[in-house]
Structure formats: structure tokens, C-alpha cells
Amino acid sequence: MSGSSLPRLLLLATGGTIAGRASDVISLNHYSAGVIAGEELLQSVPQLKQLAEIEVEQIANVDSADLTFAHWQRLVTRVREALAADPDLCGVVITHGTNTLEETAWLLQLLINDPRPVLLVGAMRPATALSADGPLNLFQAVQVAVSPEACGQGVLVVMDGWIHSACEVTKVATQGVGAFESPDVGPLGWVDDAGVHLTPARSDRPVPFAHLQLAEPWPQVAILHGCVEPPSALIPALLSAGVHGLVFTGTGAGQLSAHERRALEDWTGPLPLMLRANRCGSGPVHHRGQFARLGLVPAGRLSPQKARVLLLLALMAGLDRAQLADLI
Ligand code: ASP
Image (cartoon, rainbow, N blue to C red; front, side, top):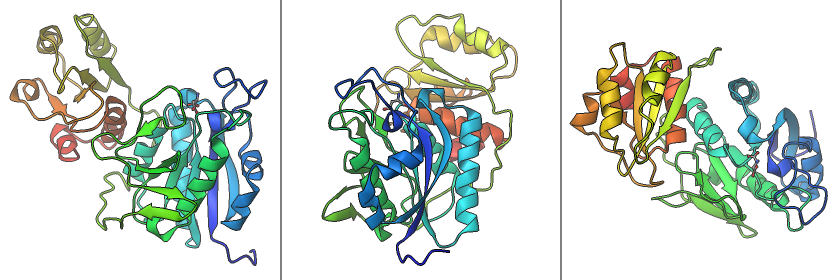
């Protein structure tokens, strides 16, 4: 028990470039991600002590391309446990690699039912770089996490001073500190030295998998990318391999080629749960009878990678096609 009157936060470190180290300060691309411990990241920003009392736990220390379902399971379990066990905990901040940050944020959005902020932050430059963005991003993430405005907003992502919703955010650039956007709708707000700017939260955020217990083994869900003359052998190969779900990254508004449609029509076995997303990066995929007849559920505005996360949880929860469609 501490005598501090500061809000208490849990920092869960998972690795990424924010915890990356290069051999010299001008190496922006050649570095090892996920090598600096969360505790060291915290100590590198002493100004955080003015904002909150922060306890650090290391969930993993990897490049986010190397995250596994086991890491996700550990992270979700720890967030749930920490919030349930400690009513005085103000929120949870997660340091994460930027490459798959939006998938983890969306996973947590679908699973964590608590109004307290759960917030992800990363960096585009390693911690050792000249003008590293990690320290300020971490400071601003904590600023948001301790602000009353962040309550009830669902899972948030703070990068480069912008506050994004887990539902909308996506990485849109391979380099540069402003690599995150929320296409179609824009960010929820921003944070600067004048404070946190967020419009009040809706009170009715749905958390469809709030009671789902994650269990090994996770389903296998593949993503297929639409293009001119996609290799027609891929669909039967995946279906024969027994995938539990498929996400089609259709061209335009979620179009599948005649080849792909035929491959589904020709398949004589049971079809897995399937979502139809798009490769445009913004805009919706709507219902179309032609695709519905093949068992494809439109993914709405979900990106292929977020559609896959939804499908993983839907499969784990034993949902059928209609129940999946109701979630979108
Ligand atoms: N390779 C990094 C990752 O862990 C990229 C980053 O964090 O910016 O995703």
C-alpha cells in the first residue's frame, strides 16, 4: 500500500520498436525490436512520476510480427485479472510493436468489458534513435490513461499525439512518426501539453465476447488477398487443410473473382465461416446476394486483419454465420 495520491496504472510491456535498440543513434531501420525491458522504458521518462504511480509487468519482449496466440491469451488474461482484482486501478497501458498493434487493440476491444482505459502505445523509431518518438508517446499515453475523459471510450491507441479508437485505427505507413490513422472517421481526439481532448464516451459500448474464455488451440483463420488472376489452387488447398475460417480481401467493395467464386461452388465439403473484406483501406463492404449464397458474410468497415480477429473469436465462441453477421 503506497501513500501516494497519484492514480495507479499497470504498464504491460510486450516489446516492439518502442523497446528497440540500434547500434547508433542514426539507425532508424536497422535495430532489434523488443530488447529493452518495460521497467527501463518507464525509467527513461522520469516525468511520468508526476502523472501516475506505475507498476510494470513484462508480458513479452518481441517484435510484434512474432506475437503468438499464447501472447494474446496471456495479455488478455492479465488485463482482465488486473481490472477485476483492483477497483482502484485507474487503467492499463500496453507498449506494443506498431506492425500488429491494431490487431491486439481490436482483440482487447472485443473482450474487455470495463470502462477504465485500456490503451496501446508504440513508436516508429527505436528507443536509441535521435528524436525517438517512444518517450513522448509513452508520456502522452499515460496522460490519456489517467484522464477522466478516457473512461468508457473502449480500447484506445495513442500515437504521435492522436487518440484513436481500436475499432478504427490502422497503420498506414512503413515509416514516419505519423504512421497511424483512422480512415473514414478520423481520430477520436488528441493529447498535448494543454491536456486531453476527447468527446464524451457513448455509454452503450457493446463487448460481444466479454465472457469468452480463451482456450488453446486457437482456430486457424487464413486471409486471402484479391488480385488479378489469383492462384485458383489456394482456396481448395486451404479448405482441404481444414482451416476453420477464411477472410477474403476482395478487390473494390469486396469483390471475389469468378475463379474464386467457382472454387467455393465446387467445394463439396462443409464451408468454414468466411468474411468478405476489402483491400482499399477504407469504406464498407455491403451485403450482396451473389456472395451470401456462397456463405460469405460482409465484413462492413473491418480491415481484413481486424475481420480475422473477429472471426477467431466468433469461432472460439461457436457462433454461426447469422450470429457472426449480427456482430458487424
Ligand atoms: N517491428 C516493429 C514491431 O514490433 C515495428 C514497430 O514497433 O514500429 O511491430
